Length: 231
Image (cartoon, rainbow, N blue to C red; front, side):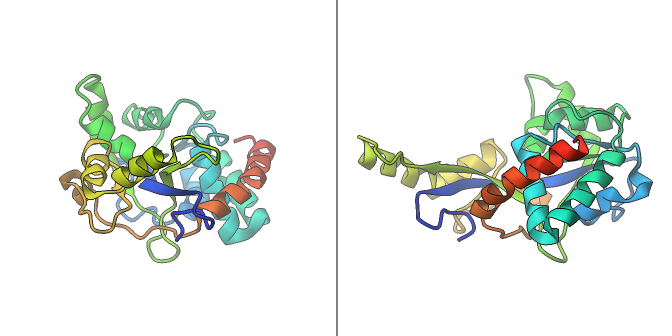
């Protein structure tokens, strides 16, 4: 139910977790288990992220507001900014590159970018970026790891509703869901579809089941926090 609109106006087609990527060489396994750990003083000057205003990070902060309240989320964001190795820049892959180059040891990233780097024949240098990091699914002993989704819906005044419904039904059938999993490294929303071989290597994880609608509701508050703390 957390993956669809309460009024059935849209629903998720695939999932990706917002994980913590860490240096294989410089961050011991178990050093970070929760997203809250990123504010610890020992990570000062060791974290890289893209802009806090990007939808991925704003959504993550919205999930923290839902758990800790606005004040607690702002304290978390302040702590994260204090620990940044550089001003937020680039996309998710740029953070993996920064870990590979030794600019930082820890970063925020969506899972599917790891697969896109690991198997990137067009830009093979990205394979080295992927080799340099471990993926951490956070908060596995409590609420679970924050997720983002790819979703679909039908325009209210659509003139092609039947075709639109057919497309959405196709995108959630096992064949299409396997393509999401094997080609774009995203987690299927159809529970009857097994994970691709690559996703199996990353392991199953507990996801935060906070409704996506709630994230949208809290996003404006998250953006105000991001502006205040300079993320």
